[in-house]
Length: 374
Image 1 (tube, helix red, strand yellow):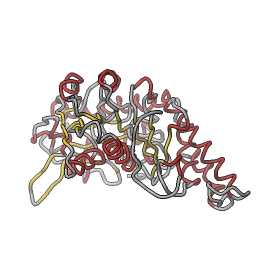
Image 2 (cartoon, rainbow, N blue to C red):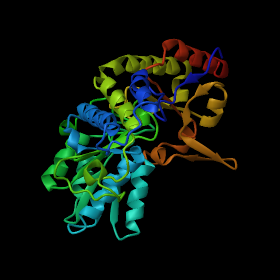
Image 3 (cartoon, rainbow, N blue to C red):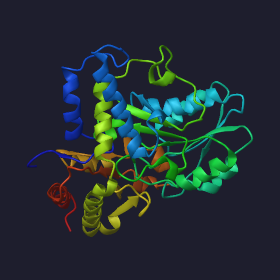
């Protein structure tokens, strides 16, 4: 290959130039504690609050409803555990789905060890949950519903507004993991009908180690990190102005997802190229239309995903199956979707980003043609 090609933007994005520019002064000059009242703390405090407003801008909420976290996993844990602990007087039941990220399913499993009851709803062959299943799963003791906005593996977008309406009618707090959607599709919280929403910095061209949790005004959520009164008493620990400004600048740039239409076009052209080359030897995972604009998860039928990637030296992408001692295990997401093992073992996820070019995708297609001669 002429150069390495990165097609794993769902795993992590590079830090965008806007974020780098915003962060640079905080690497050397603005070192004060944002909580300090003297001259050294003022620039850091001002920067953190500006970043809070920038994150709120992409979500269409008030800055006071944003809590900075260490990333999407902490935001999910805060929403799920905090929502459960704060509402124990109301009940002990949580509803989620089988295709959630481990940062949602693992907290639910942990809470079960403390007496919680978790209903894990199935999905259809496209990876979508049926809102009616959510409605039917609600009990008088349900205290939280958590459904991801879009799946990280196959890109399927869940019917969040419909579920949000159901949750509001039942008076149940509703959380969505929007790690994969911020900056890709609209994520205004009122349009989605959510009370809690998780953001992961390194999925939106911000640094790793920073994220945010939106908490709608009036929503009861217990703190997970206890100490001093940082983040309006919701998360103890001195805020990192460096990381906060990086996330804020990235969200400011990504506020208009119309820029993702170019990425969608590239993704569609790439899928067409693969289909023309492979025909019935290629199948699609995820919804054909209600899918993230940058995500393409396909099965190379009859092959193992890791073998396909091995034939693409220098291409960074992900596989949806794992090899263990000669056997192949599908990811929990593909299994929940009912993908046949003979197809799913060949799953590969290509996730594009704002720096992806058609020339790169053409080079990948050329490498695949050598493996799949017509």
